[in-house]
Length: 202
Image 1 (cartoon, helix red, strand yellow):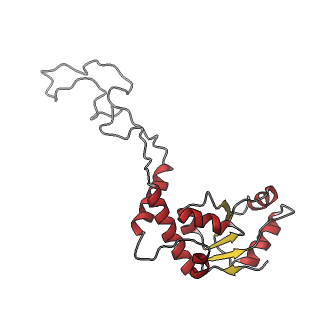
Image 2 (image 1 turned 135 degrees about the horizontal axis):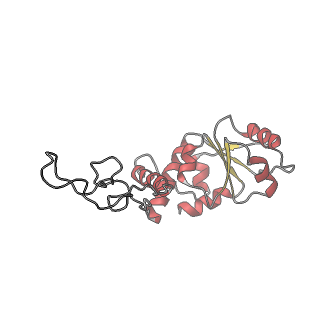
Image 3 (image 1 turned 90 degrees about the vertical axis):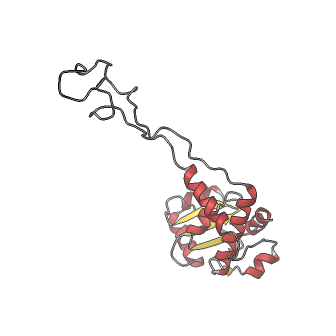
């Protein structure tokens, strides 16, 4: 299967809107930060002195012992006591505007196309659903590394062949995100996938 490197001129001819290196850096940063924040579970939790196990009995009398005055043993200064200002369950998710997402996608696409990381093929399918066939097909198109294959759709046999290959990922043009583009050494655009990207960058 022959692959053709995608140039900036070819992308612009397909109505893909790209962004130069002078713009979009902050948008990319904001979007990647949001991706990673949205993956956080936010379930870290510590118990306060009102939640740890124990009773409210005063540990010894107020006066006459020569020690500092204390109340119950659940105070934060004691082993087994509560935690002061510890983590509580929270939502780390961040919202990013559509215009910021679009600008970030334009910037990253411009960078990887300029860097010669994008190739186009007319079609990509593994009829027998075998991993060996998938690897041979990908190696014929791109050099070894992290490979991102973008198409508008894949058949079940192709998904089956690719699912056990850690260094390759299949993704549709509608679901493609900026983080996947940044992590890939080579991006393979299949068929009309570039038209989908043109709609997303418009």
